[in-house]
Length: 258
Image (cartoon, rainbow, N blue to C red; front, top):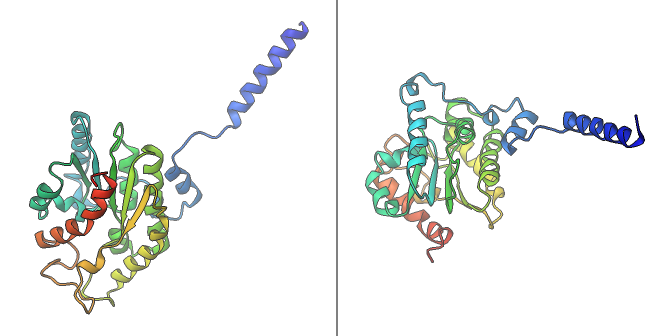
């Protein structure tokens, strides 16, 4: 073997070794999940609730079809049943505020942070280049498992990181989790409030912006009126109008409308 052949062989061996030791590329969310396997809020998974089985995966597939067929989407709404409800009790308000803004509703009832992570991983923003995504998720982490605030916050932050990696130029409006329960002594409301105190630190005011509109729903004594959220969790039409009006200045700004 000549000296030149020896050098070529050595280079090939070194290349093969380097390929074996290089880590496989993964999303920020995947990396966080591997580092913290005990935090369920980080482990991307499909919705497993029996009541959601008939419609959850078909809705996911329908959203993928809608994404493929629509020419332009500028605004995403990502979340759980409260966001899903823009297609129900909030339908009229959605039409008024977002009907002409090329908006897409990616809210799924019952979802926790891990379901949102799964949906993002399986194509729900693939090929999109929206100007803005509004995220409001986490109340089911409190309600379903009573997750620790730092765990729910980790799941929310993983969603933000995942979106930042997938669509770097998109603005993100991260909403504080809405208040729930009768008053400030409600155990699940306390979990949401504590989670909000953590996730607000995720804002950099460049690409990630934080907005908490909780006070808009509450009476002066911090009770949650049933005239706005009849089940003390989900807004009615009046509640959706309060939500839309509270977000509007930020949405106008982040969409570049003013």
